[in-house]
Structure formats: C-alpha cells, structure tokens
Image 1 (cartoon, rainbow, N blue to C red):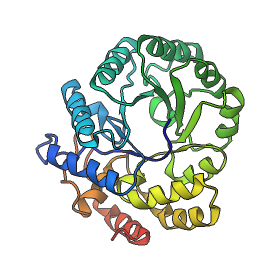
Image 2: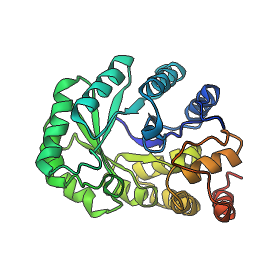
Image 3: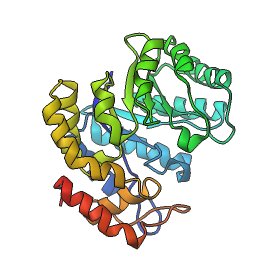
Image 4: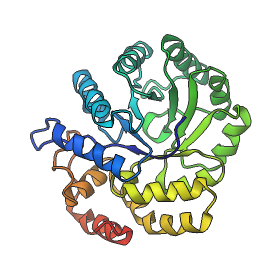
Length: 291
C-alpha cells in the first residue's frame, strides 16, 4: 500500500516547548512538493513519548488537513499497554489516517507469544491497516521473523518497519510471510540494500533534511536503477550515520533549525545537540548538497 521515501517527521516546537503548528504545516507542504511518498507523525522522531494525547490528535488533524489526500498520513499509536494502544489506534483511525505504525511494547519486554497476542488484539479491534515496528535497540524486545509471519496472516497487518539494521532479516521475514506483506527499512544507512533485497521503502529520518534526494534514491532503487541509487546514497551516507551521533531526533532537529525550517524547540529529557557535533552535522549536510 505504501512505498518509497516515507518521512518519520519531526514535531516542530517553539523554545517554550509548545507545538509550532504553522511550522508543521510548512514542513508537510514541503514534503509533498519534494516527492516524499508518505508521512509518519507521532513517531519516535516526532518525540511521541513527550506528547500528550491532545497534542498527538492535533498533529494528526493538522497533517490530514494539509495533506488533503495528496500524501498518505501514518500515525504512530504504539505503547507498552495493549489497551492504550487500542484506544489510540481507534482514535487515529476515527480521525482519518491511512494507517497506524505500532511500536513493540517497550520496558515490559513481552515474550514472542505476548507480542503476537498484543498485535492480534489491536488488529482485531480496528479496521485500519497496521504496520508493525521493530526497533530492539530502543524497546528492549525483538519481534522475530517467525512471529512476524504469524502476524502477517492477519488481514489488516500489512507490513513491518524493521529497524534492526540487520539485512538478513529481509529474507528471513519474507520466508515466513505472504507476498502481499510489505517490508520497510527503519535504518537509513542500510535502506538502499534493504530495498534492493525486496523492501518497499524506508521510514526515514534523513528524509527530514533531504526529502527530494531521498525520494530520488528510493525511486531509483525500487526501479532497479542501482547505479543512480548508489550514487545518491553515497552523497547521503554521512547524513545517514551522523544524524544518529546523539539520540534521535536531537541531530535532525538541529539540522532542520540550521536550515531555517524549524525553531530550536526540543523537549526534555532530550537536549539540544552538543556543540562538539555541530561541525560534523554541518559537513554532512554540505556533502549531501542541502547547504
């Protein structure tokens, strides 16, 4: 259902910590203009753990209003509580999003059977496409390919954002899943190879900074134009790596502020990018050609 460069959108904030709604509207419009194929709001990059329910719903409403059916809007609705995840997924569905991206439960570290039953319960409670989201480095649990295969049999679970960075996972998940189950990279640095092995796209942090180039790279990769895709990706590799020099979204928000696209706002417990990394990020932006 979704493909190509899907941006994991930052949440613009004022220095006071309040949402910068005008800036959010401009960012969404920019992504539409520059070819981004989908927008994820209220994800990790969007500082979802610090957003209130009211703020999350407001962000979804703004995104849908600006998008006006020109680009798919996917909402992050996962939590470490199954009942809470169901409530938030229902809310996003009722607001009109195209799909929900649901993170594995964090901190409580469920078993594989617990993960299966968690997603099964959510999928059975809603009539909306669901994309699984596996990022063990942040959650402390790993959604294994065998479990993904079981979940892929549920009709409205349509794909997975696989953010381990382990390219072997592509073939392993494909082995256990049907052909109509889509795989999306959650790791910019390995996204090109992920797509060349059968992935449908990337849910990208880098796309915040270089939306047009990420669109062009993904489009080339999905069309089998390996030379062009590799050339663009080489320009972006420094960004892919250095946008994680401190916890995401610290570096990417600094880069976007440097471009003048957003203000300086970021919420505790995250803090602004350390001064010692400013030159590194700026050089990565220069290599990509964005500045």
